[in-house]
Image 1 (tube, one colour):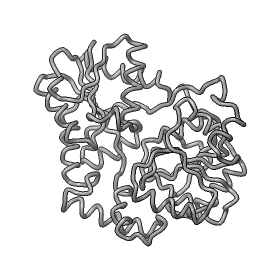
Image 2 (cartoon, rainbow, N blue to C red):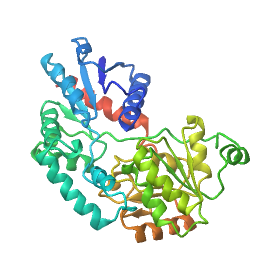
Image 3 (tube, rainbow, N blue to C red):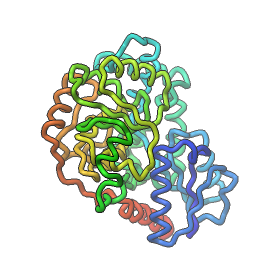
Amino acid sequence: MKIAYCIRGDYEINSGGDVIQMVKTKNYLEKKYNLEIDIITDPSEITQDFAIVHVFNFSTYIISKQFIRKAVQLSIPVVSSPIYWDYSYASTKYFYYAFQFINQINESTIQFFRKMVIYLGYVLKKPSGVSYKFKKNARWMFDNSDFIAPNSQEEANLFLKWINREDYSNKIKVVFNATDILNETGADIEEDLFFKKYNIPRNYILQIGRIEFCKNQLNLIEALKDDVDIPIVFLGKIKDKLYYKKLKKRAEKRGNVYFVDAVPYSEVSSFFRFATIHVLLSLRESPGLVNIEALANNCPIVIADERFLPVETYFKNQPYIVNPINLTEVRETILKAYNERKITPFDFEKFSWDNVAKQTYSIYNEILKS
């Protein structure tokens, strides 16, 4: 069986959750089920040779819609992984940039900005993530897909409600996001060598992810601005230079904050293993692979509440879940996690790429048998 995996053209140079999900699913399906999968970035490359077209990421709707349209024209069944979550919180960044004097993201301010963003999304084409144009195209892509494969039931419910298709839940087939099963051999670099190489102190709080507004690094610094004895390490590329400029300024004022750019992938697990806790106060995740990777490396996690990621599916038994835009709550939860360092059991078999491949293959089989 030959399958087309369709994704944005810059996927090789601009990786993200959609790319990781696509590549990992492809690799495991080919290994376990002997499928032939081609990565397609140009709709003209879709031909009758393909039994199924699988489209990744609805937020890149301009190209994603073209993939689906071509498949429909050729009467090829379509599976779509929308990778959707509520964009309204993250889209408030434009107002925070307009008001540079605001140094933290709090509940009252972000809710006010969020209402404005949603209103503008209906009137204008921007911000794209909350625009009526995006909703209209997302609804079309849903209607023209045979099955939709969200990463959680929460994502499915949010998406169906947003596009006014709650009566069509029969098209939903949840496919989890995952991580590779943890490395039983331990850290990839010796502990003393690690701290010497990266020149960071021990007992640090870690956050892995791109430096951008959505990841909410600023609130981590602001919540711990008086706890300067606790080191904070940010590992990730700078995606938003304007946000980084403000973050860097606040980091320098606090002190004991360290920025690490790209590192060899083989050493990422060491950052988890030597960290005290991993904190991700993100305003939008589905579900945030770094959270699962942290747990796989026995690193306790502090995560945002159910408004910002699918807590019920992935993390309902984790002890440190917090409102990421309440600084008092953030500080209390982080300090509690930092001192307790609790980890509750996590089902790595359920959220493994082997199981993702199994779930995905089941969808393909259902299509071909119908």
